[in-house]
Amino acid sequence: MNNQPRGELVPGGLAMVVKSTYQENIGKGVRLLSRLAPKEIVSAITLPNQDFQNRMAVELWHVSGDVINQDLDLSGESFFHESQLMPINPSADPLEITQQMEEKV
Image 1 (spheres, rainbow, N blue to C red):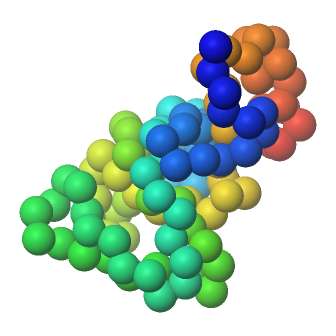
Image 2 (cartoon, rainbow, N blue to C red):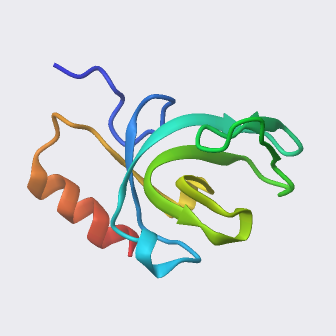
C-alpha cells in the first residue's frame, strides 16, 4: 500500500504534467526530484557538471521523465510550478485520477 498523501506533490512521488510551455510535455508522467526555492541551485541529472538556478520568484519542482525544456537545452528533466503538475498516487483508482485531471484542465 502506498502511503503517499492523496493530492500532494512529494519528492520521489509521481505526477502528470497538465500545463507546459511545450505542448509535447502535457500528459507526460514525471518523477518529482526536489522542490526548489527561489534562487536555489540544483545540479542537472542529464548534463554532467551543469547547475541550474531557480530564477523565478516562486518554488519550482525539478522533475525527471520523458520531458523537454528547450530554453535550458534539457531533455529528460525539467522544472515546473506546482500548478502545472497533478500528483499521481499509484494505488489510486484510475477513474479518480481521470476526474482529478478533468477538474484541473
